[in-house]
Amino acid sequence: MLKPHKLQPDDKVATVSLSWGGASTFPDRYVAGKRQLEEEFSVHVVEMPHTLTDVEWLYHHPQARADDLMQAFSDPSIKAIFSTIGGDDSIRILPYLDLKIIRNHPKIFMGYSDTTITHLACFKAGLCSFYGPSIMAGFAENGGLFPYMIESVRKTLFSCNPIGEIQPNRDGWTNEHLEWGVPENQQRRRTLQPSGSWRFLQGEGVHRGHLLGGCFEVLDWLRGTDFFPSLEQWQGAILFLETSEEAPSPLAVKRGLRSLAAMGILSVLTGIIVGRPGGNVPIADFEQYDEAFLEVIRDEQGLDELPIITHVDFGHSDPMFILPYGAIAEIDCTHKAFSILESGVIN
Image (cartoon, rainbow, N blue to C red; front, side, top):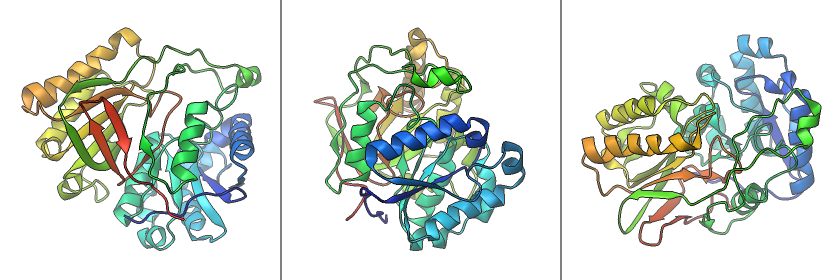
């Protein structure tokens, strides 16, 4: 995998709207994310031609969204590209992407949720990209950026040192939604839940593999396309999965895992890490998702030695840490630790 160059202060970061045009619907939220990113990391944020374009127009012009991405990759003055927000139809940009442009101009690309689509396009092009915060969901955090996320951005995007052990966030987490169209909400910190510990459901010893995954529902949309990783690419991977704010049920997750089993994917993995359930799922119901994983992986597939960690700090709860696609990671079941053993960037 090609690694992009690290970010440095004064670098130019482009923002792209690859799916939903939320930056035009909630401009104040976008501005807050842009401002907090620039102030904390001393970078310069620039918009591509259609980043702030009307939702309806963007919906009808997926090629324009793809062109923005290609232009951002091609522009030598731009050092990183961040998604403004997710959505549900960035899959429509795939016919218009030029993977040679991505491969020949490697640079940091980051986002999550529906942005899984573009991450797997980067993966197909051979580029390490970064599953992490977007401008409007992450960098625009109400009441200021979470220190846990700030640390992850600095360690992952601004440093060439191995990322190292990822500690669970100890300062509380949230998936509360405060309406973005209410200006006073931007200054109000969302309600935090006690963090607790990540759950190591099964596994023994130390297991290593390259990171590959994304949003559960979006991965499912890509099955059968040329952009879904081959079985060979899944071989030896640590699969990371998280569910969206639409909160698919434990039954839906179970059925999706059965599809991965039928494709032969679960049996070739070296580990699985799972974010907290996205959406308005009561904490009391979290265990049902754990049970879905164990029912399919342990009980139905007999993979009782495959490490599984759940309730991990990435995806549709905040704060989140960043996962670099293709980087070698390690699950240490003995010491209940998760580490990323290399950097996702170069000098």
